[in-house]
Image 1 (cartoon, rainbow, N blue to C red):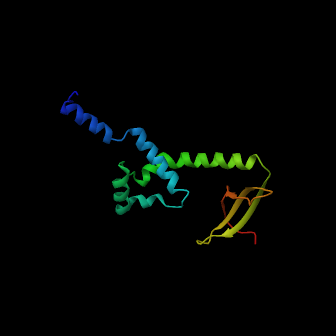
Image 2: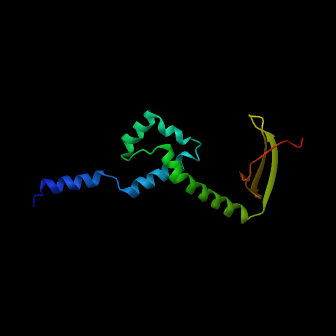
Image 3: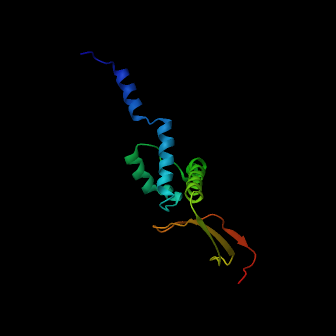
Length: 137
């Protein structure tokens, strides 16, 4: 049995514990993909208790919300748009336009698009919210 030098053992130990840059990037994307569809604001990551908890069990750096916004949100947005286009455009679809006043008194028109399904209930996607100067009602 060959004895390893302490330098090799220390190096090996540090390499095992230090997360790779790719691991951190993947973690950041996965964290965004978990939080955004769950309607958990990314600003919750700034909570010291949550940050400490995640840091303790994840062994990776917990990113700041601005890091996720800059690096992950746009890519998730593009993936979501692609998913919606593929789902809606390969089927018969409907469009609904609704006009309302928001909590600040602004007039907003929403355009929704969804799939006409024969057997299962359809899901609508908001694709064109637009602010207007006045309402038609």
